[in-house]
Length: 226
Image 1 (cartoon, one colour):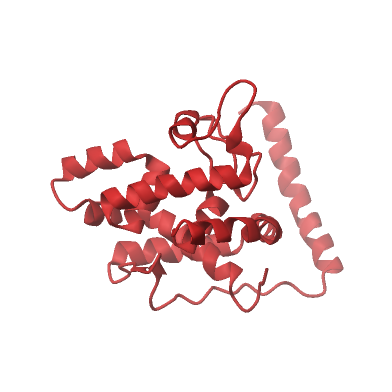
Image 2: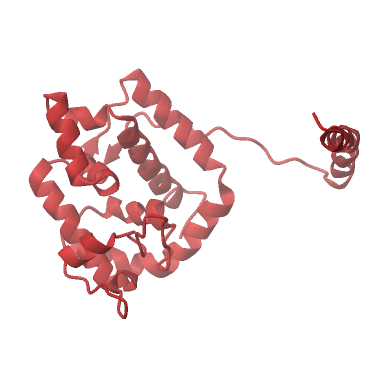
């Protein structure tokens, strides 16, 4: 350990008690820590999530508890939902896509229409360039319709409906949106069993459903309204 690093560590331990004491003197009351009540039953797009399985139960419980205290991102998403949900929801209904998929946009981009991922996915729905073109969006050096809220939502709905026609399960559709249909097909063949059952057993889909359900419960709970 270098002398400088050692010095700063010593300072840290010296000053932490002072910070805590100062905070305690200026704070009359601490916020209550409340563990959210675990639901007896959870549905995603009207499909029952199997919480009888211990691993699914524990993952959902972990996501529900940890995400509940991400106040800054949740508050930001709620503010943006007031603006964008009235645009997105009628399109999903018109396209006959379950409105639970509104929270796909919340998870993908925190409802930021200008979001750009390191993989070059763009917009509220985080659509890749090739996928955008495949579903009718103009994507080139001059125009990128993935930033267009209505057009990108139509494209996302087309993708979701194509995936549902292929897999017959909205749960698997949610997984395919994140992982890609090629990946879902490959691991489904490797598993040698039902793609739906296999994907539900994967960690990524359990976390995905936990995120979806958490966002939905927070948005429509009695404590937080949009």
